[in-house]
Image (cartoon, rainbow, N blue to C red; front, side):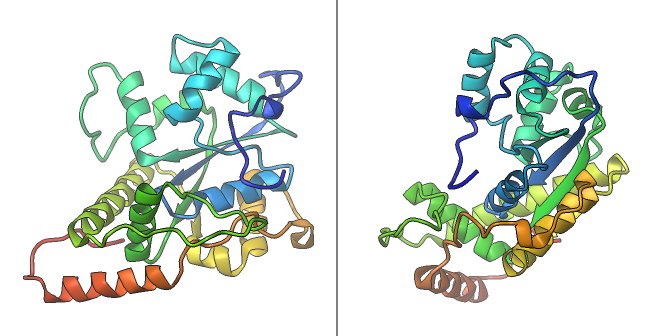
Length: 273
């Protein structure tokens, strides 16, 4: 698999659906936007034994896949079809941002509405991904994560392929309030994930974005070993198919953000982990 792959592509469907009676490893990659989850998931998929993890419960993927697989009706029908069509070499994996987990919780929990409690049980998720193992990726620099999200939302540039020459993009007009709101939302999602794991006695395999970028092959190898039970030779792992999107403009925005925050009146803000 090369380049930024499209999870909706029929070429990724199993020619013969996976038999649920056959054993398989199920993994959920838990994440927040711009945490490096796409980089990690593509690395796992490229090994050939890490499933084909993507945001399958994002409506952008779920709606067209549901139509193609003829599994409309319930999330359970979609989950069954998803595992049948996307389990490879005994492994299935999916990625979930917190807002996608919230939506599933509302769909599968009678009377559920609004924001879920911090002690939300994981039973509904295990109905879709039985005996799931969990990977949790975070980004240490939450300011940089918020700037990355803000930039991508305004430019619609979510990835930069390593094999394509990219022209400079016009950066949006700096907006401290918007970036700060995005930062608080990201930290709140991290807090929800942390409470979710604690409430359900889940010990995920943790990945830090900065370490993934620094030692890509080593981190992908570690996740394959600790989550999928597969020993992978680091030398067999290809270089990442994408490159970081940070540049001098990103650095300038981060400097303005830090300056504005330092010069504003002290008020309550959510702090990172």
